[in-house]
Length: 104
Image (cartoon, rainbow, N blue to C red; front, side, top):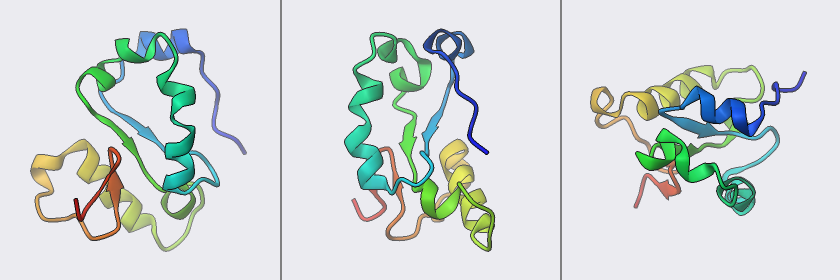
């Protein structure tokens, strides 16, 4: 099963406050390499998540695109992204959010 596709117009209408990018089968470096496909679009700068610097790249391949024992890690990653003020100290080395690793 694939994720549903949406149009750019629908994305603009949603006015997302947070965007989490997690393509199926992609690790973080591959996703980052393909980001210009998104960021070059003329509507990209209009999105509230982009304006607020709340766009995150996560390892969909390892944490989100298949069920398994990492479901707790997946939930923690989303909690950290959506509610960072409530999750102080949760970050573990090697996780990546918004293009920076936890070590940065």
